[in-house]
Image 1 (cartoon, helix red, strand yellow):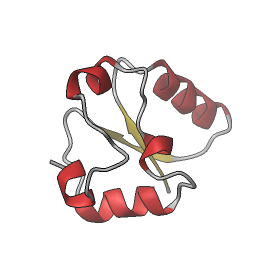
Image 2: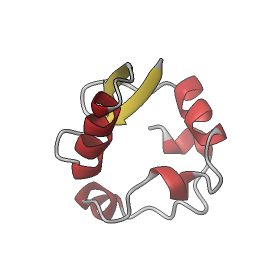
Image 3: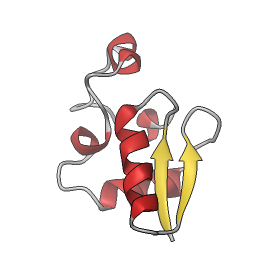
Length: 81
């Protein structure tokens, strides 16, 4: 089954869910606000990317701006806190 990690206010998340439903693909939605992402899940997600955190973190989001973190130098264990 496809896992999709979402945030309610994310328009890209809504579009992705609509696309999956349109193509009748079953998915498991995991809300990033209400659910904890474990280390194993984070490692799995990162293993599916080409660019690491750059591919999974939206630099346009307000949350990203509030964090003021240099994702190029952060350690994996610190990333999931």
